Image (cartoon, rainbow, N blue to C red; front, side, top):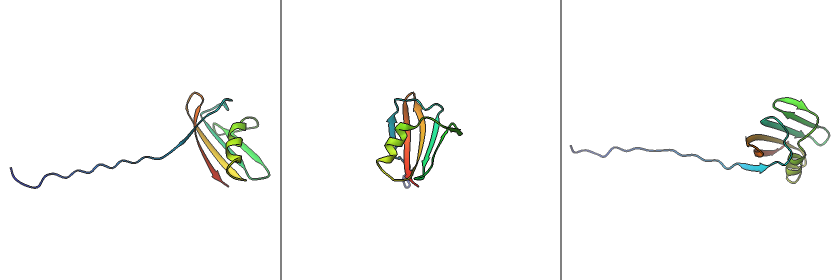
Length: 86
């Protein structure tokens, strides 16, 4: 049968992520670290934590004076990390 061919479209999206390997396991599967220039706040698995996150501090300090680091465990010692200025 004649006629116009059927048109189809397919949308694909991708986003770049930063993946780091952490030598020291902070525990949990998600970490939030906030440095406001005065006080440091660390949350692991949604709960306040007093220790850990030194490697995440090191990553962020090279970029911003104050920052928020969010890290999600991908597998084992591999983490997806995002660093944003505060």
